[in-house]
Length: 512
Image 1: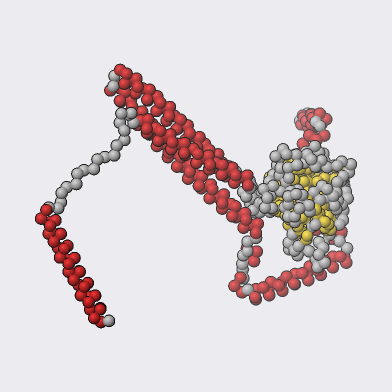
Image 2: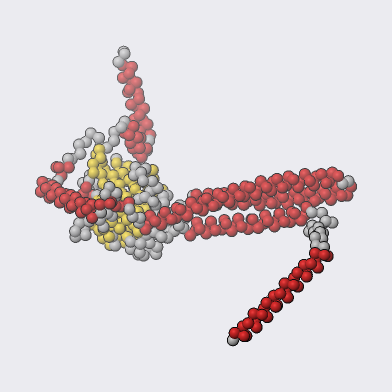
């Protein structure tokens, strides 16, 4: 009896769980199962796959090729990155793995930069997992009607809905054409709005496909923390080909950006309880020895280059060479951020000055109201009525002034919020809006000055005109005796000067 109770309780709970699973949709059931697996701590085994990855330095071989990858179109591999498309109009490029993947579940981590001088970029970049290589085509530089999935980083707003830049997940069974005019919104399985252009640090994307669940995480490039990912999108019940090619492509149109991929790292995911094949079992012995020799050769050359550099530059030992120079993009971003900071401080200063003007106006209104109230109380009859009318007019004028000052303050707050929240620091739109705010502030200040002058004239009585103070009479400091003495001395000095000059002229004539 003591054993039957727990057993019956377990059976009841199992029955309820099975009934709940039957009532749930397949997507809900799979998500519930995934949540239970995560809760139980059953994480998949993760193994790096070097044949489906690339990363600098020494990314390119002597013949200009990337090991295990093929590049087409306008792609330009270099030692530390692959430029999929340069910042020129109508460019297309892509890189694809040479071999199909042999694992069912995977995870890729892609690090890239999208940089350009314009406020708007085009067209964008795409990360692919497809059954066949889409070497060239109209969809971000890759082929249309693919069988697999594409994660698009679209930076141009084709449909005019102002929802770009955006990250869009689009699946295809090999029969659909990509909807360019609507930015793929009619075919999107999931999406999120993220600005990935002109960031201080490289943008990182982590795409995970595990147990028919596709998840996209993104690091927007605002911090140097490589693990600072945030959720972007997820697709449940995603069925992908069991084997496929990984690729990354980009394209430009009338506008242009540099699309640079710094690394593409692929990991195989294996369910817990299943043994992943050992790396040694997949690599033939000959290839293993060949790769080991190449690695040792590269390592020796690297050590030799380091020693030569240290001999030629003894004063730079211990200092990384990459930190000594500033790239063009880093310099432009730094200048933009410094300009934004200066604008931010100037607007704060103007906001404080407006607060001071508002306080002065309030004190002035209070003082004028009290003075006019006293005058109105001391003058009976008709004059008291006139004072009351003047008081109402002055109060209305002051209310108008206060309203305008409040409007100025609100405009300053909007300007401050605009400067703080700009996502495109170097955009022409932000500069134009900031200039408009300053023009509005200037107009408001002119209105305040005019209203204050009008207020001063209204507060002065009509029978009293502003007069300049009369000058006091100057005292008589010089007597008659002193005056004649001064004239006599002046005459004697003048006669002496004439005589001296005549003597000098006579001496000069005698000399010649």
